[in-house]
Image (cartoon, rainbow, N blue to C red; front, side, top):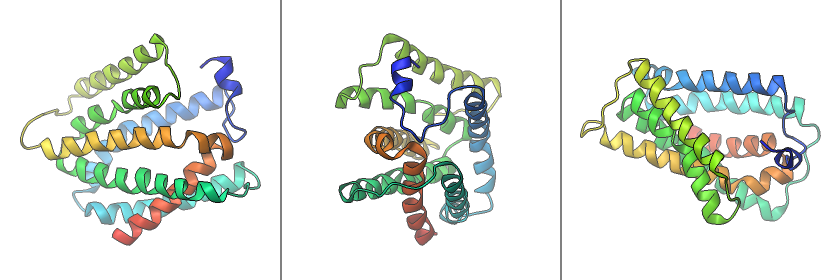
Length: 215
């Protein structure tokens, strides 16, 4: 990340340094085991029930983090409310439905590889809407991310099969990947105004209400 990009980060962003690197490493580890853990959980729980159980816990945890780390919350502009609600529905209802039903209908290895393409969709969408013109290094980094995930999945001897038995789940995972890219790009102006932690929390709370109602 360049110095210009660092200066442009909103006040609520985390500090660059070792703690951030460790947090990112932890996130990567958690996300890496996420697919297999969810596949096991879905053997016992219906996808909607599983979402209805886990999202209130996530929402409560994020509420405590916001209170502890973000300080007083700035008032939400009235014109931003529809956008926040829309992002909450998109990123935490539509995405989660496609993700949870998709992973239930495909293999964990398939899901991991198909979702690893999300950074590529995000870069493409950012370029299309004119948010940024990423340099070659960004494209190479995105390609390396996908390649790395493929190597991890195949190296871990997870089953990866693209065929009729998994096509519905695979298509849902592709849809989830595209939706998350739209959510990421669509929330950029809001994260600059309110900080990423607050925006994540607000949209998660919107999504939690919808998922609990469905579960």
